[in-house]
Amino acid sequence: MVSPDNKDHHERAYQLADDIVFRPMIVTDIPTVIAIEQDSFGEPWSAQSFVQELTENMLAKYIVVEFEQQVIGYGGLWLIVDEAHVTNIAIHHDYRKQGLGTLLLRKLQHTAMYFGAKQMTLEVRVSNEVAQHLYEQHGFIAAGVRPGYYTDNNEDALIMWAELQP
Image 1 (cartoon, rainbow, N blue to C red):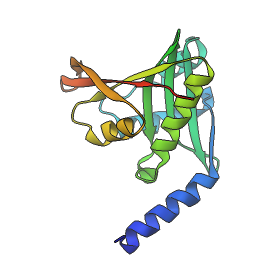
Image 2 (image 1 turned 90 degrees about the vertical axis):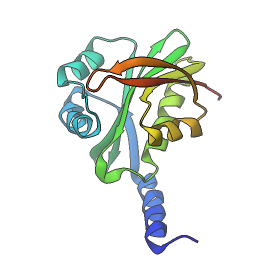
Image 3 (image 1 turned 60 degrees about the horizontal axis):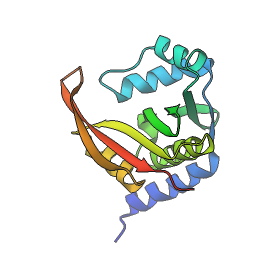
Image 4 (image 1 turned 180 degrees about the horizontal axis):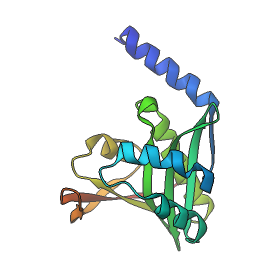
């Protein structure tokens, strides 16, 4: 049985989905993206890293999620031949657990396929079971481990791969 709170949560998620806009990230989005990045990760990227990704990295594609004309999430990938590598994906803490991470991941997968990618890969902390579950729901399977990948605490990264299906 769905609790009233859970029902409200699901109704809000559906309502949000109708008002969500995905668009390419631009340099003026970076301050908001950095705030979400710092809130989401122990080792956040710098503003300069995002500037370089947007202005100098021809392999990079970054997307923001907007709700009511405010950036509430973002994701990025690198396209290398026929593979896409997810660099980062995050949703503002006020909008998490509403299905937006799922929508963003789907958008990244569709973007990768549009540019010819047949596979997608990413790294995720071995302790981040919530993210792993999201990725598994989208066809990702664990394929290996990068020992000590995260320098903030020397945590291992789980390497996951997915075949992209049109």
